[in-house]
Image 1 (cartoon, rainbow, N blue to C red):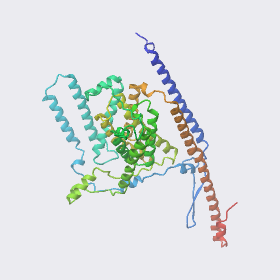
Image 2: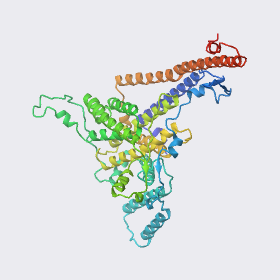
Image 3: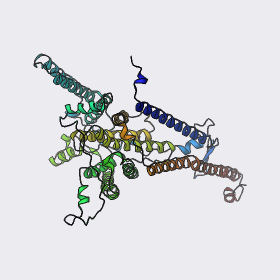
Image 4: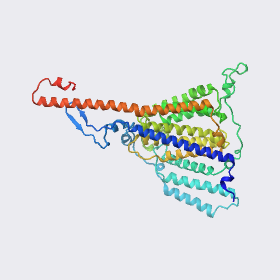
Length: 521
């Protein structure tokens, strides 16, 4: 029996050693950052004082601050107020008369009866086939359909209710099926995975002819008098409308102009960084910053903000369809069914606390990685951009991503929400598994060395981000807490003087106003 380590080629052993060294280096960096953060946390003030609430009527109420830290001044200053009134959202922001029609009932027994009838028909009345490939395909499809029926009828509702909760349960189940498919192909070779897709479309499994968008970057090419703007027309492909509508949808999902703008600029920088790996990322400067960032992405974000403003001002008053007397009202009610049931305006407050800052950075990182996976997956699996599988994946990511962002925001903002949402969990698993599939199938592409100037740029950017984070949430935050503690100290001094004036007033002493506002030494 051949010894496994000796059977490895020299290149594979070198790759394994490099990977282990990289993992150890990243782990050491994380431990270093962890210890630095812990050391900085010890520099914070520990306040154990009494805070007094001075009312206009002159009454002074003392509030004892517990020395165990549960009610310390630092904790009160660090606590981030919730953006949305979640209790109000549950009870009074939306009016719904609660009319339940046939389509809003679960019908679990009906679905079970129909499923049993289909299985009985297949068992006793359908003629069996001897084609193994045909039987395997039908069996896999049947398993998926039964799982979808189980999920749509039994899984609890998510945060979205329109157009129907069953749609979002279906999206959750489809995302699970997609994650299971990714895990399955992760255990295959690259060639086997590509050939596996030929069972879906016989035209797949063929190498792609990648298109370069760089080259001649002249906006006006005088050497082609018949069409001097041919460089611009050559860049007009399916990615132009997908950029525009994609960022419109992303704005509706994230509901924040700053985050969308930062992500738009960051993705263009990532295209500059990775253009030596994928030909699709090699674009002209005006294609990056004018056509993509400014026109397509910018207009999509602007349209998204206008849509958000309309949805935030729109009244959400729901009546049962059969309770509406006019046909026009019924048609409007049917159209409104495909809009949101209620609306929550997201305010992520990324710089309000270190936790919020790190969570928003994590959201941006996972969103950018999801976008990069789109390009790398089609590259390693040999999928043309307009292929149906790419489109279906994008549609699934939009629906599942919308629920994930909503769950993620509620986790950060709602004090009663303590668990990571199930759709968010599956979404993170999908992003990670997609990246692992890419890393396994085309490790040589994603490990191509970065150009030197790109390395210097990212080192400078990451160091600047780390330094700003430490300054903002540790040193600057410490000074702001100290200033507020001084204000509390002056408030306590004023309270003591006011108490003395109250006692003097009871004794009939004059010059009370002067004593109350006289600064004590």
